Amino acid sequence: MEAIVQDAQGLFNLETSVIVRRGAHSNVSCSVQNSLLIQKKEFTIQIADAFLPGTSPWKRAFFGALVGLPLLLALLLTLALYFFQKQRRSQEKLKEQAEKDKGRLTTELGESGPWVVCLKGE
Image 1 (cartoon, helix red, strand yellow):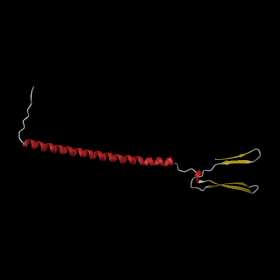
Image 2 (cartoon, rainbow, N blue to C red):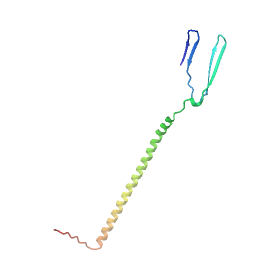
Image 3 (cartoon, rainbow, N blue to C red):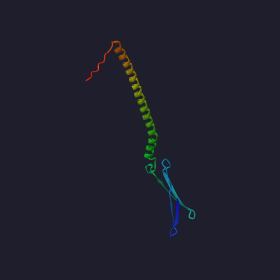
Image 4 (cartoon, rainbow, N blue to C red):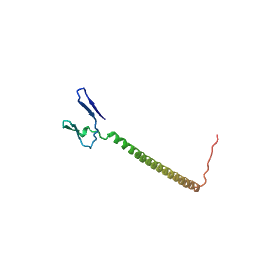
């Protein structure tokens, strides 16, 4: 945006803006040239990098979370599924062992002779 205004004394006021990004040249020059009087005035200012806008640390944190959270959730889901399967296999093995023990005990009790069960009445 540029605005040129002539005041009551015939002098011109010029107002303009420049956007300087980080990594660009930090020297900004301004020159005014009067073609009738063949005069030129120029000045240069130097802008330190500390004053130039950079990438916001919040933006980096947001993108890191955007990538990191799904990966973390996938890892947790994989671990949960692994431990649930391990627990299910362990329970199946315990059931199989219980069935074997039950069969073995039934066989041992059957071979040791007849068992008499007495029920007492009142």
